[in-house]
Length: 249
Image (cartoon, rainbow, N blue to C red; front, side, top):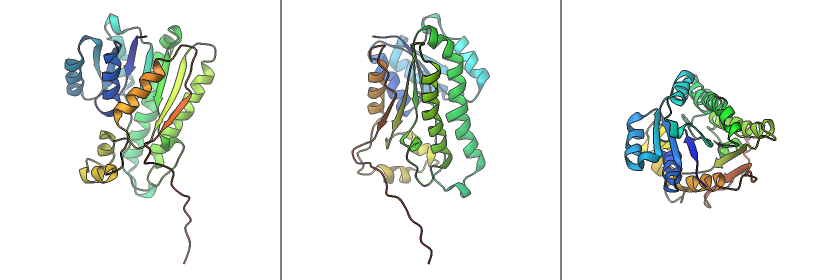
């Protein structure tokens, strides 16, 4: 089974690993992202099966222009992977800049629903698939998660809503909910703090982007009558924290 897949956020991490995984098995891949030079390097590596579409997921006009400019051989999209997203900061809510919250909402929520809405008619026509990247943060709260966790809870619930609204259309929808995974995501979240990055992953045997890419490839290549509603994935080293109790003196 092969087809055409659009993967948002392919300039690093999960998206980059997914592009390689799907091209390896003969899929046509549309890779999107803001950093055109990274997309071009991926194009040089992956060849004619990869189409680079550089745009900002928060810009609806840029989304429309990029879709309108797709080459003929990439126009019939079978799978949309909504991977583009970010977390900014680890501080508690009272100490967070409102601009950071707004950026996370614009990227993780508004951008995701915009490109999904734009492609829904084609995905319905082709009885395709939508894979949304949520997070364990969509279910399990932690200090500093605040708006990032809220955006991922939206993604998880939006996936369920899409499944409901697309009943009888033959379109599959999956929410992928990773835990600790070693990627550039953490450098972005900490403002490029390499020491914090190293401390987080030291000895943790975290997931790798290739683990998520392999999982999504498996989801996308199930028979058309099989829908994986959601998958929560953690490294063995990660589990749930205990409940906290604050006590007054």
